[in-house]
Image (tube, rainbow, N blue to C red; front, top):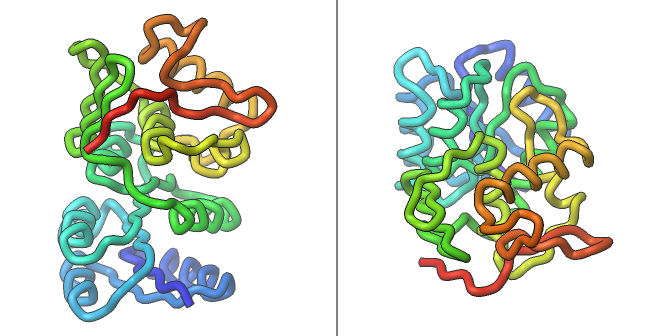
Length: 228
């Protein structure tokens, strides 16, 4: 049975989340504060963590840092704010995903499933076609010049560099992405985000060399990448 570590200070939200997760077959351990979370981390092993960004005695970013040091598990941030800076901070810290409250139960379960299926985290440094990505700092550069991506564009890029040898179907990408407004990314919206990302990272967006289209299937990362 997969074990979920839930860090949430709102008792009612935590109660409902725990019930939902147990109904889906997960074991759940709940901490209300940063202090409680750190104690539980030292005594239990988990498969995934759901961490609220706002805590009464600290914040979820500090808890995420401790999780990274103690257990190699996916982290999904829970936030009541659509503030993009917070979202990007969480992703830069190595979080797998973020979920904006209020969220639909089936969508949260889908996000958890995608995080648990993920084969690994993006490399700390990645280069391809003049594009360099430093996931430890969240800095993306094209030919040495910094490129500024939205939270969802950055998340989309992380999905590609996290699976550099795989063809990513549109269904897989849709399953991996979560829109900042709390809605699933639609097929049409995905096409728009692929286009916007290409416009920012490709030499010639009309003839992409970094994010390639596999007709009838989806997309894949181009060759010639270097990671560490």
